Length: 347
Image 1: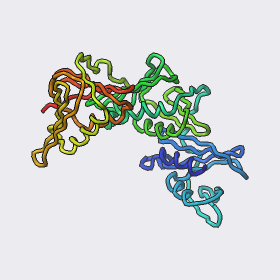
Image 2 (image 1 turned 180 degrees about the horizontal axis):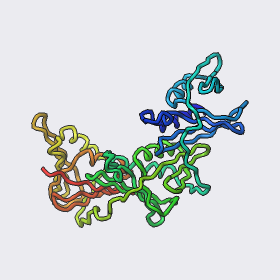
Image 3 (image 1 turned 30 degrees about the horizontal axis):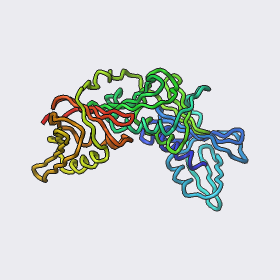
Image 4 (image 1 turned 60 degrees about the vertical axis):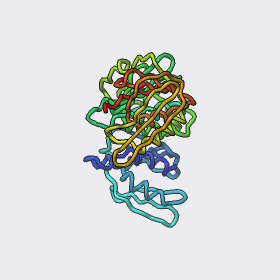
Protein backbone atom coordinates (compact mmCIF):
# COMPACT_ATOMS: atom_id res chain seq x y z
CA UNK A 1 0.00 0.00 0.00
CA UNK A 2 2.83 2.39 0.83
CA UNK A 3 4.64 1.59 -2.41
CA UNK A 4 1.51 2.21 -4.52
CA UNK A 5 0.97 5.59 -2.85
CA UNK A 6 4.62 6.60 -3.26
CA UNK A 7 4.56 5.56 -6.92
CA UNK A 8 1.64 7.94 -7.53
CA UNK A 9 3.39 10.70 -5.60
CA UNK A 10 6.72 10.24 -7.39
CA UNK A 11 4.96 10.59 -10.77
CA UNK A 12 3.74 14.06 -9.75
CA UNK A 13 6.64 15.42 -7.66
CA UNK A 14 8.79 17.82 -9.67
CA UNK A 15 12.47 16.96 -9.26
CA UNK A 16 13.50 19.78 -11.67
CA UNK A 17 11.72 22.58 -9.82
CA UNK A 18 13.66 25.47 -8.29
CA UNK A 19 11.57 24.82 -5.13
CA UNK A 20 13.21 21.84 -3.38
CA UNK A 21 9.98 20.97 -1.54
CA UNK A 22 8.22 20.16 -4.81
CA UNK A 23 10.55 17.18 -5.25
CA UNK A 24 9.36 15.87 -1.89
CA UNK A 25 6.39 13.84 -0.76
CA UNK A 26 4.38 14.96 2.27
CA UNK A 27 3.57 12.30 4.89
CA UNK A 28 0.97 13.31 7.47
CA UNK A 29 -0.10 10.95 10.27
CA UNK A 30 -3.39 11.11 12.18
CA UNK A 31 -6.09 8.72 13.45
CA UNK A 32 -4.22 5.54 12.47
CA UNK A 33 -3.96 6.76 8.90
CA UNK A 34 -1.14 8.13 6.80
CA UNK A 35 -1.82 10.73 4.12
CA UNK A 36 0.78 10.69 1.35
CA UNK A 37 0.68 13.69 -0.98
CA UNK A 38 2.74 15.38 -3.69
CA UNK A 39 2.27 18.41 -5.92
CA UNK A 40 4.06 20.35 -8.65
CA UNK A 41 1.57 23.23 -8.21
CA UNK A 42 -0.33 22.10 -11.33
CA UNK A 43 -1.02 18.51 -10.32
CA UNK A 44 -1.60 17.10 -6.86
CA UNK A 45 -2.06 13.52 -5.71
CA UNK A 46 -3.27 12.42 -2.28
CA UNK A 47 -3.45 8.84 -0.97
CA UNK A 48 -4.68 7.69 2.43
CA UNK A 49 -3.56 4.33 3.79
CA UNK A 50 -4.10 2.56 7.11
CA UNK A 51 -1.30 2.35 9.68
CA UNK A 52 -0.77 0.99 13.19
CA UNK A 53 1.15 2.27 16.19
CA UNK A 54 0.93 5.81 14.88
CA UNK A 55 1.83 9.09 16.53
CA UNK A 56 0.51 12.28 14.99
CA UNK A 57 2.91 14.41 12.98
CA UNK A 58 4.19 15.19 9.51
CA UNK A 59 7.39 15.26 7.50
CA UNK A 60 8.53 15.56 3.90
CA UNK A 61 11.00 13.24 2.18
CA UNK A 62 12.42 13.20 -1.37
CA UNK A 63 9.77 11.40 -3.41
CA UNK A 64 11.77 9.33 -5.89
CA UNK A 65 14.54 8.17 -3.48
CA UNK A 66 11.91 7.19 -0.92
CA UNK A 67 9.90 5.32 -3.53
CA UNK A 68 13.02 3.46 -4.73
CA UNK A 69 14.01 2.55 -1.17
CA UNK A 70 10.57 1.20 -0.28
CA UNK A 71 10.40 -0.77 -3.55
CA UNK A 72 13.28 -2.91 -2.32
CA UNK A 73 11.70 -3.71 1.07
CA UNK A 74 9.40 -6.55 2.10
CA UNK A 75 6.75 -6.76 4.80
CA UNK A 76 5.63 -3.90 7.02
CA UNK A 77 7.57 -0.65 7.00
CA UNK A 78 8.13 1.60 10.02
CA UNK A 79 8.93 5.27 9.47
CA UNK A 80 10.01 7.39 12.42
CA UNK A 81 11.04 11.04 12.58
CA UNK A 82 14.40 11.42 14.30
CA UNK A 83 16.75 14.34 14.88
CA UNK A 84 14.53 16.98 13.34
CA UNK A 85 14.57 16.49 9.58
CA UNK A 86 15.78 12.88 9.43
CA UNK A 87 13.54 9.84 8.92
CA UNK A 88 14.45 6.35 10.05
CA UNK A 89 12.93 3.67 7.81
CA UNK A 90 12.92 0.06 9.03
CA UNK A 91 11.65 -3.18 7.49
CA UNK A 92 12.72 -6.55 8.87
CA UNK A 93 16.46 -6.35 9.54
CA UNK A 94 16.96 -3.36 7.24
CA UNK A 95 17.37 0.17 8.61
CA UNK A 96 17.78 3.29 6.46
CA UNK A 97 17.97 7.01 7.13
CA UNK A 98 16.76 9.69 4.75
CA UNK A 99 17.01 13.47 5.07
CA UNK A 100 13.81 15.48 4.67
CA UNK A 101 12.61 19.07 4.86
CA UNK A 102 10.17 20.91 7.11
CA UNK A 103 6.54 19.95 6.46
CA UNK A 104 5.41 23.38 7.69
CA UNK A 105 6.62 24.97 4.45
CA UNK A 106 4.93 22.48 2.10
CA UNK A 107 2.49 24.13 -0.37
CA UNK A 108 -1.21 23.98 0.42
CA UNK A 109 -3.00 21.15 -1.38
CA UNK A 110 -6.25 21.73 -3.34
CA UNK A 111 -9.36 21.01 -1.28
CA UNK A 112 -11.76 18.61 -2.97
CA UNK A 113 -15.49 19.44 -2.94
CA UNK A 114 -18.10 17.12 -1.45
CA UNK A 115 -20.07 16.60 -4.67
CA UNK A 116 -18.57 14.07 -7.12
CA UNK A 117 -20.09 12.49 -10.24
CA UNK A 118 -19.50 8.79 -10.98
CA UNK A 119 -18.48 8.14 -14.61
CA UNK A 120 -17.30 5.16 -16.65
CA UNK A 121 -13.54 4.83 -16.24
CA UNK A 122 -13.07 2.88 -19.53
CA UNK A 123 -14.93 5.64 -21.41
CA UNK A 124 -12.73 8.33 -19.83
CA UNK A 125 -9.65 6.34 -20.88
CA UNK A 126 -11.03 5.94 -24.41
CA UNK A 127 -11.89 9.57 -25.14
CA UNK A 128 -8.71 10.95 -23.58
CA UNK A 129 -6.44 8.36 -25.21
CA UNK A 130 -8.03 9.07 -28.59
CA UNK A 131 -7.13 12.76 -28.23
CA UNK A 132 -3.58 12.29 -26.91
CA UNK A 133 -1.76 12.10 -30.29
CA UNK A 134 -3.18 15.48 -31.39
CA UNK A 135 -2.19 17.42 -28.26
CA UNK A 136 0.22 20.23 -29.10
CA UNK A 137 3.67 19.81 -27.54
CA UNK A 138 4.62 23.47 -27.93
CA UNK A 139 4.21 24.73 -24.37
CA UNK A 140 4.14 28.35 -25.56
CA UNK A 141 0.78 27.56 -27.18
CA UNK A 142 -0.59 26.63 -23.79
CA UNK A 143 -4.22 26.64 -24.90
CA UNK A 144 -3.46 23.90 -27.46
CA UNK A 145 -1.27 21.84 -25.09
CA UNK A 146 -4.52 20.53 -23.62
CA UNK A 147 -7.56 18.35 -24.16
CA UNK A 148 -10.80 20.30 -24.21
CA UNK A 149 -13.74 18.69 -22.40
CA UNK A 150 -17.22 20.12 -22.92
CA UNK A 151 -20.76 19.03 -22.27
CA UNK A 152 -22.47 18.03 -25.52
CA UNK A 153 -26.11 16.93 -25.34
CA UNK A 154 -26.34 14.02 -22.91
CA UNK A 155 -22.67 13.20 -23.20
CA UNK A 156 -19.14 14.51 -23.10
CA UNK A 157 -16.96 15.65 -26.01
CA UNK A 158 -13.18 15.72 -25.95
CA UNK A 159 -11.06 17.60 -28.49
CA UNK A 160 -7.38 18.25 -29.17
CA UNK A 161 -5.40 19.90 -31.95
CA UNK A 162 -1.79 20.72 -32.75
CA UNK A 163 -2.63 22.91 -35.74
CA UNK A 164 -2.02 20.10 -38.27
CA UNK A 165 -4.84 17.80 -37.17
CA UNK A 166 -7.91 17.91 -34.96
CA UNK A 167 -9.32 14.97 -33.01
CA UNK A 168 -12.86 14.77 -31.60
CA UNK A 169 -14.14 11.94 -29.40
CA UNK A 170 -17.54 11.63 -27.71
CA UNK A 171 -18.96 9.49 -24.92
CA UNK A 172 -22.44 9.04 -23.46
CA UNK A 173 -21.79 9.81 -19.81
CA UNK A 174 -22.56 12.23 -17.03
CA UNK A 175 -20.39 15.34 -16.80
CA UNK A 176 -19.04 16.87 -13.57
CA UNK A 177 -19.79 20.30 -14.97
CA UNK A 178 -21.44 21.98 -17.94
CA UNK A 179 -18.48 24.34 -18.23
CA UNK A 180 -15.59 23.96 -20.66
CA UNK A 181 -12.48 22.43 -19.15
CA UNK A 182 -8.97 22.55 -20.67
CA UNK A 183 -6.92 19.72 -19.18
CA UNK A 184 -3.14 20.11 -19.61
CA UNK A 185 -1.17 17.35 -21.32
CA UNK A 186 0.46 16.00 -18.13
CA UNK A 187 -2.90 16.07 -16.37
CA UNK A 188 -4.40 14.00 -19.19
CA UNK A 189 -1.61 11.42 -18.79
CA UNK A 190 -2.20 11.13 -15.03
CA UNK A 191 -5.98 10.81 -15.49
CA UNK A 192 -5.51 8.00 -18.00
CA UNK A 193 -3.04 6.20 -15.72
CA UNK A 194 -5.42 6.54 -12.77
CA UNK A 195 -8.55 5.36 -14.64
CA UNK A 196 -6.98 2.30 -16.31
CA UNK A 197 -8.23 -0.91 -14.75
CA UNK A 198 -11.11 0.77 -12.92
CA UNK A 199 -14.83 0.30 -13.62
CA UNK A 200 -15.89 3.73 -12.37
CA UNK A 201 -14.18 7.00 -11.56
CA UNK A 202 -15.57 9.94 -9.62
CA UNK A 203 -15.05 13.43 -11.07
CA UNK A 204 -15.67 16.92 -9.70
CA UNK A 205 -15.02 20.40 -11.05
CA UNK A 206 -14.39 23.07 -8.43
CA UNK A 207 -12.65 26.41 -8.97
CA UNK A 208 -9.59 26.03 -11.18
CA UNK A 209 -9.32 22.26 -10.58
CA UNK A 210 -10.68 19.02 -11.96
CA UNK A 211 -10.71 16.36 -9.22
CA UNK A 212 -10.68 12.61 -9.83
CA UNK A 213 -11.28 10.16 -6.99
CA UNK A 214 -11.18 6.40 -6.57
CA UNK A 215 -11.44 4.87 -3.09
CA UNK A 216 -8.68 6.54 -1.04
CA UNK A 217 -6.80 8.02 -4.01
CA UNK A 218 -7.41 11.62 -5.11
CA UNK A 219 -5.95 13.47 -8.09
CA UNK A 220 -6.30 17.23 -8.62
CA UNK A 221 -5.49 18.76 -12.02
CA UNK A 222 -5.22 22.53 -12.40
CA UNK A 223 -7.12 23.50 -15.53
CA UNK A 224 -5.69 25.88 -18.14
CA UNK A 225 -7.37 29.27 -18.15
CA UNK A 226 -7.36 30.16 -21.86
CA UNK A 227 -9.55 30.46 -24.94
CA UNK A 228 -9.76 27.31 -27.07
CA UNK A 229 -10.03 27.75 -30.87
CA UNK A 230 -13.54 27.58 -32.40
CA UNK A 231 -13.07 24.03 -33.66
CA UNK A 232 -16.50 23.85 -35.33
CA UNK A 233 -15.12 26.18 -38.01
CA UNK A 234 -12.31 23.73 -38.78
CA UNK A 235 -14.48 20.66 -39.41
CA UNK A 236 -14.98 20.37 -43.18
CA UNK A 237 -18.47 19.97 -44.68
CA UNK A 238 -17.45 17.73 -47.58
CA UNK A 239 -20.22 16.01 -49.53
CA UNK A 240 -18.00 13.35 -51.11
CA UNK A 241 -16.81 10.43 -48.98
CA UNK A 242 -15.49 6.88 -49.19
CA UNK A 243 -15.71 3.82 -46.95
CA UNK A 244 -12.82 1.42 -46.42
CA UNK A 245 -11.78 -1.38 -44.07
CA UNK A 246 -10.01 0.27 -41.12
CA UNK A 247 -7.54 -2.55 -40.33
CA UNK A 248 -6.54 -3.03 -43.97
CA UNK A 249 -6.02 0.70 -44.46
CA UNK A 250 -4.01 0.96 -41.23
CA UNK A 251 -1.70 -1.89 -42.25
CA UNK A 252 -1.22 -0.39 -45.71
CA UNK A 253 -0.41 3.07 -44.35
CA UNK A 254 2.10 1.58 -41.90
CA UNK A 255 3.94 -0.13 -44.77
CA UNK A 256 3.88 3.04 -46.84
CA UNK A 257 5.20 5.06 -43.89
CA UNK A 258 8.47 3.09 -44.07
CA UNK A 259 9.39 4.98 -47.25
CA UNK A 260 7.70 8.30 -46.55
CA UNK A 261 9.84 11.41 -46.73
CA UNK A 262 9.20 14.57 -44.75
CA UNK A 263 8.65 16.61 -47.91
CA UNK A 264 6.46 14.16 -49.86
CA UNK A 265 4.40 12.35 -47.20
CA UNK A 266 1.72 9.81 -48.20
CA UNK A 267 -0.07 10.25 -51.52
CA UNK A 268 -3.69 8.99 -51.52
CA UNK A 269 -5.32 8.67 -54.94
CA UNK A 270 -9.08 8.06 -54.93
CA UNK A 271 -10.17 5.93 -57.87
CA UNK A 272 -13.44 4.28 -58.86
CA UNK A 273 -13.87 1.62 -56.15
CA UNK A 274 -10.19 1.69 -55.27
CA UNK A 275 -7.66 3.59 -53.18
CA UNK A 276 -4.06 3.88 -54.29
CA UNK A 277 -1.47 4.75 -51.63
CA UNK A 278 2.11 5.67 -52.47
CA UNK A 279 5.23 6.95 -50.74
CA UNK A 280 8.67 7.48 -52.20
CA UNK A 281 12.11 8.58 -51.14
CA UNK A 282 14.67 9.25 -53.88
CA UNK A 283 17.48 7.86 -51.73
CA UNK A 284 15.71 4.73 -50.42
CA UNK A 285 12.85 3.53 -52.61
CA UNK A 286 9.07 3.59 -52.80
CA UNK A 287 5.96 1.68 -51.72
CA UNK A 288 2.63 1.38 -53.54
CA UNK A 289 -0.55 -0.14 -52.03
CA UNK A 290 -3.98 -0.66 -53.57
CA UNK A 291 -7.15 -1.22 -51.53
CA UNK A 292 -10.80 -1.88 -52.34
CA UNK A 293 -13.05 0.94 -51.17
CA UNK A 294 -16.58 2.20 -51.66
CA UNK A 295 -15.83 5.37 -53.60
CA UNK A 296 -16.00 7.19 -56.88
CA UNK A 297 -13.07 8.82 -58.62
CA UNK A 298 -11.75 11.81 -56.72
CA UNK A 299 -8.61 13.86 -56.16
CA UNK A 300 -5.13 12.88 -55.01
CA UNK A 301 -4.38 14.15 -51.49
CA UNK A 302 -1.02 14.07 -49.69
CA UNK A 303 -0.91 13.78 -45.89
CA UNK A 304 1.53 12.98 -43.11
CA UNK A 305 1.17 9.17 -42.72
CA UNK A 306 1.79 9.36 -38.97
CA UNK A 307 -1.37 11.42 -38.53
CA UNK A 308 -3.42 8.81 -40.38
CA UNK A 309 -1.83 5.96 -38.41
CA UNK A 310 -2.64 7.70 -35.10
CA UNK A 311 -6.23 8.34 -36.19
CA UNK A 312 -6.94 4.82 -37.46
CA UNK A 313 -5.21 3.19 -34.49
CA UNK A 314 -7.40 5.03 -31.99
CA UNK A 315 -10.70 4.04 -33.63
CA UNK A 316 -12.58 0.94 -32.47
CA UNK A 317 -14.55 -0.02 -35.61
CA UNK A 318 -14.39 -2.24 -38.69
CA UNK A 319 -15.05 0.43 -41.32
CA UNK A 320 -14.00 4.08 -41.50
CA UNK A 321 -15.44 6.86 -43.61
CA UNK A 322 -13.18 9.48 -45.17
CA UNK A 323 -14.80 12.68 -46.40
CA UNK A 324 -12.78 14.70 -48.92
CA UNK A 325 -12.87 17.79 -51.08
CA UNK A 326 -10.09 19.04 -53.33
CA UNK A 327 -6.41 18.06 -53.24
CA UNK A 328 -5.56 20.96 -50.91
CA UNK A 329 -8.55 20.50 -48.60
CA UNK A 330 -8.44 18.57 -45.29
CA UNK A 331 -9.63 14.99 -44.88
CA UNK A 332 -12.26 14.08 -42.29
CA UNK A 333 -11.75 10.53 -40.99
CA UNK A 334 -14.69 9.14 -38.98
CA UNK A 335 -15.03 5.83 -37.17
CA UNK A 336 -16.84 4.69 -34.05
CA UNK A 337 -17.29 7.73 -31.83
CA UNK A 338 -14.21 9.57 -33.08
CA UNK A 339 -13.52 12.04 -35.87
CA UNK A 340 -10.12 13.32 -37.01
CA UNK A 341 -9.46 16.23 -39.35
CA UNK A 342 -6.09 15.94 -41.12
CA UNK A 343 -4.64 18.90 -43.01
CA UNK A 344 -3.06 18.11 -46.39
CA UNK A 345 0.61 18.51 -47.25
CA UNK A 346 1.61 20.85 -50.04
CA UNK A 347 3.93 18.99 -52.39
